[in-house]
Length: 256
Image (cartoon, rainbow, N blue to C red; front, side, top):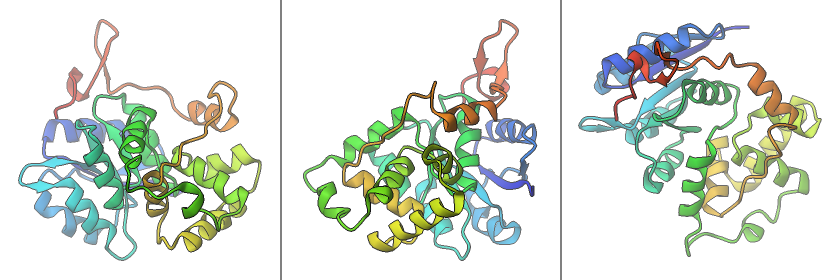
């Protein structure tokens, strides 16, 4: 299997290099040299063609959300996962609308970031429960369209697939959850995009969130897809201190 080529964008060099080290320990990733100058991002992506990008939201005078929008508008764009210390609804909604397919808190464990990027590279999305609830709360505004009206053209199976997409499952996990082949799930996802008039998985998920669609996940202790997801991770923390506690790269909480 060809490793996932990954670019990390964060203006805190120590944090960026620490995160780069986390991904170098994952055999299915090939991290490029981290970019700490946001002005270099578009050029590096155009030259090196990464499969996925981890984008910090706060990059000094340049917004990571704006950079995400520029990246996702490129031909054959990379899959962008936004990494942030700010979990407000405006940031979450802005990231999704800019084309991000993952939204991860810097306060969480490293395996969340690894899982999010892996899901994104496989064509899925990843929004942890705490952040997803923020997005859903923002979507439940008076301007949100009723789900029944917005998704009336979808079949029952397509609605089921879309709910799992909103819940952060990638194509492989959806396939396992529904006991259908990955090609069948791919067809469902393509049909969903066509019927909703969207051009990407992220757009379809964003539309569902704005409409107030709620995730429907089974108990992770009995969900076979969740069990496989857990089995694929070694649970390695960002770093391990001598006392056994966990922290960000360098042994401390990651910077904001």
